Image (cartoon, rainbow, N blue to C red; front, side, top):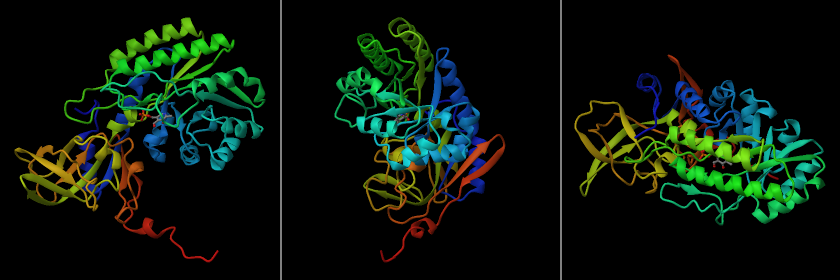
Length: 414
Ligand SMILES: Cc1ncc(COP(=O)(O)O)c(C=O)c1O
């Protein structure tokens, strides 16, 4: 079942009547409702960031800015998009395993609210910028979260992220050596698509207990803690909603633990998928139908070149009929135009009987949709992005038939 609230059917129908497929549609009202509901679940004083990687379209970022979100960025490009959307440096946090020359240049001009550092090389480079910068250490802790509802855990294993506990301790002990950096506290990113509050909160508690121990050992008083994002959304039939009421009461308990174990520290979370996923759909048209060895195939003008994760994160993504006669439900494997078996739904989806020309929408595609598409693979067009706000629709990125394919192709002697 898709999360509530979901994109408004009237906006979807209107967009499908006005915009050629394939396209993305985002609903500003859903963005606002989800952000506000999650913010209300947080204990007093906690701040809700938006992970811009989920959807860095400037018009989408503008909606989050108006809500008072800090944008969590993971590249210079995302920071530039946020600046275009009206965020100041102080309205952004910067994460990512590599902060290269481009990131350092943007940081220098626009010192962020917080930088989540992951290597000592990075700390030295930030210190050398000669600016006063706020830096939190991203930790890579083994929090023993593996569980069937845990999604993709990104801490404690062999993933490249963050500081090992030993390195982080040493940096805390030697924190005075970075004259330009205020080491403010700690960051963690437990993983993505964590579908139950229990798993997320268990990780949060492990993080707090670890931080408390390090702080006691080194007489360090953090002012910043960031628990990352990772809140899941339902994709497959049978997946349940992330239980916000349970999350709220669990966070209140976690907040009391923090007060006891660490003291007065500002806490943050930075989800992307939970906030933005259900606020967007990917809309595509059925261009052909066929049946093979008992399987119904619906071939569409959209696919993984525009929407890799919505197609691949679940082998059975939620889809609805937007325009068509409908009828009795049938099961279809949805396949796009690319010459790879990755470009199909694998498991058949249940949809009202389809005809050529029908338009379907893949739900929960607002996060990690456009940005994860394999835009150049097989040289197909790129989709438009559309924002619905109230009764109005805005094109927020033009479609491209072929311009994007040749834009940077040159043959210049060097
Ligand atoms: C550091 C960091 N923060 C936040 C996020 C957002 O995660 P999610 O969309 O799962 O909430 C990510 C995603 O990869 C991340 O790497």
